[in-house]
Amino acid sequence: MARVHLPITVLDPDGVPVNGASVTVRRRSDNSLVNLYAAETGGSAVANPASTDSTGRVDRWMERQAVKMTVTATGMTTYDEYWDGVPAGDGTIDTAYVANSSITKAKLATDALNGYLKLAVAADLVAKFGHNTTGGWAGANFNEGTITHGLGRTPLYVIGAAEKINTSTPGVSAVVFSPSTFTSTTFAFRVQTADEAVTSAVCNFWWLAVG
Image 1: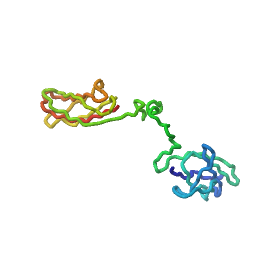
Image 2: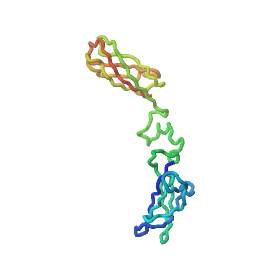
Image 3: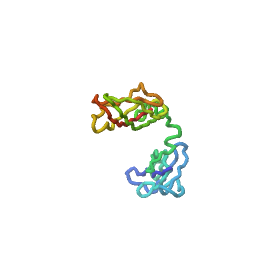
Image 4: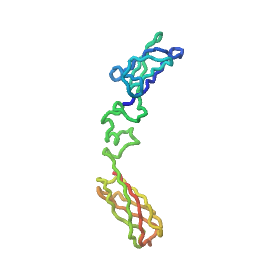
């Protein structure tokens, strides 16, 4: 678990930093003393309570967590400050912040607050993509066929984009995938052109199936 620096500065009522104030750091979950360290990494735990320096700060580190910091100083009323440690520069997430099994497929699929990541179904969505080449057109403005997608389930959506026909024929006006043709193994496609006299076109297109 990564460490964070204690985020406290003790000031007197006039706003002057207090040197030598005592700061006791306790874990909010069970009120136990937190291990404090002199550096961001390495070393053994040091004294808790810790003391402020001439700037009113405590130059100590702790593992990130939710804590209560109790401040005691001569001539001042003892007070508490509460703080939640956040992920540090290592970019990891501690189990104290995201407990095991707290994020489930069902929650991603149904939680009302999860509008951005919401899945269509509780099971993981999967996707497959591929490239297809059609040819042998003769006097028609379309070509049809089927593709084996490899999803292992019936796709919810299939989209595609044409790459080219060939240099001597018009461009593709549409690549169509009809949901009524979707099965757990295949889907049908229809590639449409604007020229009914195509005789030997070769059309390359990419497809993406999500299920």
